Image 1 (cartoon, rainbow, N blue to C red):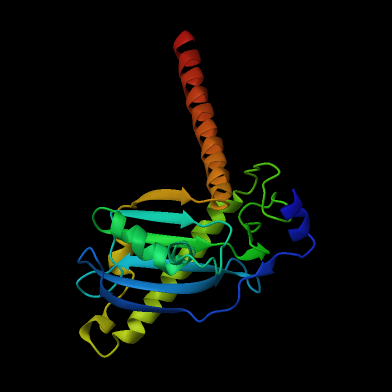
Image 2 (cartoon, rainbow, N blue to C red):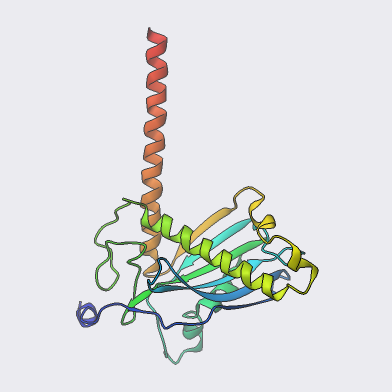
Length: 235
């Protein structure tokens, strides 16, 4: 309680601005990947989320269709602990490379840092509007699907940014004349794994709440269809 009271006196502050950057290369799994960090706001003028990504590339050096996407939402940050292992686990870029190495097959890894912090506390207000000053949820309200819509928009923005960077770096080669969206969107959607650590679990819970609402809606529609079919048989 004492920590929260001290932190709540200062409003959540956005993460410091950074330049979007990335590089191609072989990862530990032997796959050709694009790995980098981007700053992506959810809305124009809003605070940017820091997104680290390790994405599979096709032989043509465009973004490939992965077998799965793993999205990790990080939590409260730790800086200057004096323990190298702890400091590394607070680095989104390191986590993206680590997560990609743990996934089997051609999988993409995304690591999302909160856009705002109240001291060391992560505040995911853009994805979970009901959180308090230090990022703890008061409730989970799926109205408007803020987490699902927000995450989709953020990652779509990232994909466009990464495609642009890849195109610029390969413009002099044959791959520069290819449409980078062809290999990415021409196939069935990939599986998605949602992970949350510490305060990142707040976003996961919001997404689970959204899925529950969708499931209830589907069950209601199925029940309506069964009822309508039963009434037709009885007539």
